[in-house]
Length: 240
Ligand code: URA
Figure (cartoon, helix red, strand yellow):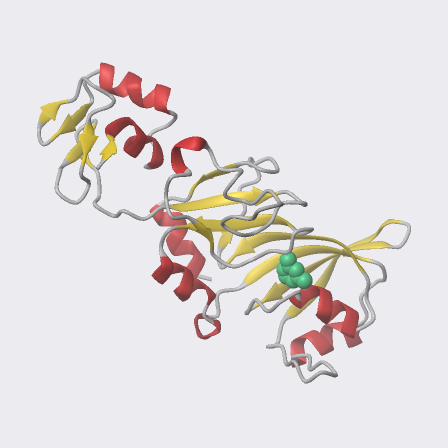
């Protein structure tokens, strides 16, 4: 059971204050009866809730897009460091949330946070070929040999083999010794980009994830901000 104002806030009807305004306006019905108390308890598995005449789906899972800042851990909890879950608004922290796929502590950008284990599994399975796109600043211009090495699938001296990936330069020299490149991966191994770049003799200066499958990081999200992902956006992840 959860409070109706909390439930509607999680489901994207705005802040608790916004939800209270909807309740006050008589827009929220619980089992066909107008709700007047924002603290009223709801069992989403049994009760029928509607807002403005539209029934709330019974899907109990939540999907959040976050623009992770550097210095924050991609984990559910940690004794010493701040995690992506610590950055979420209070009203959604109570769920069993976890980041689906990790970014290193010093990497920025798109992290998907959810409580849906099946979804995370589907999204991360290499067999699903969901791409992850990154912007990286490297210390040398790309040569055709770099591009070919990525496309062929790199094998490191310790035997680690990476799936074929893409790399392309997207700007000339930005500052002295800084070149912006785009990298697309189809799997997520530990320190993958750092290790792939090192293997071809490129130094990494900055890394940000910008896209998962066909879904881009919302440019309106400042570092540390997050928002819910809509059902239509969720589908875009697999439609790339
Ligand atoms: N590759 C890395 O090396 N680090 C990340 O955070 C993501 C991909």
